[in-house]
Image (cartoon, rainbow, N blue to C red; front, top):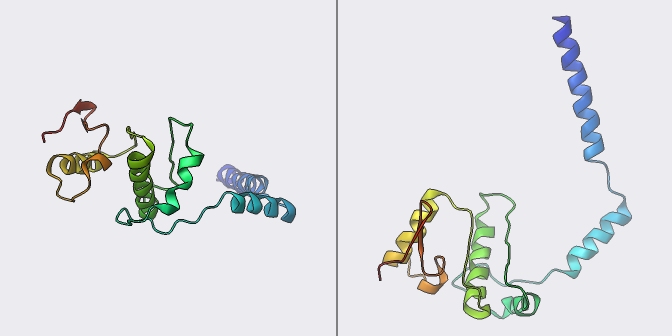
Length: 148
């Protein structure tokens, strides 16, 4: 029993020590430098909705991405719907205005099924060029042309 108590105490001390090392306080000057970098590269977006008709706020991507063929978009967490909505608008803009025509992304089976259904039936009334992967359906690793 004493052995377990000692292991527990040592474990708690180790966790507290490592926590202090990993999450050390950042000096104020360094914080301000980081914030200045964030401000320098910030550009206001007027809407994250794909229904937003005025895309002038996204035109900045024309110059930033003009020589790129590949763009990788990440996410903080899988459950962040606002980020997914904003990425949807951005992908739509890049496809329609910048020549990006292949979108590869991580998706669960249900999400892929919904995408495939939309490509087949257009029940959500999304423009057919704004959804899907190069006009193909992906199902269980198989790429198929949609029935139109």
